[in-house]
Image (cartoon, rainbow, N blue to C red; front, side, top):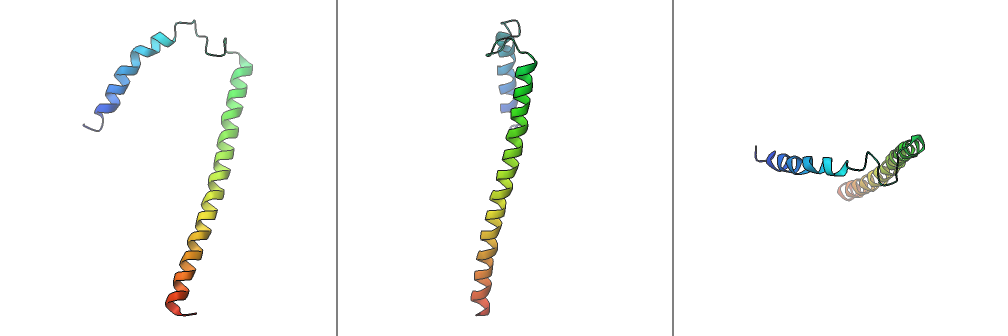
Length: 81
């Protein structure tokens, strides 16, 4: 229960702010939201995750290669080749 207490406090603190932020008749920071804004935002989200997955995969491959090289060096030290 102690782990959930901060989450409940944060939720109770954020609930009143929702009505305060909705006071502009639903207009956001960029004005009225139309199909163009939603489309470009969604496209940005899709591109972000595609680039993120590609970069994370590349980083994992580089780190795996380093790990395997380090293991090979340790094995050569033990075997004596």
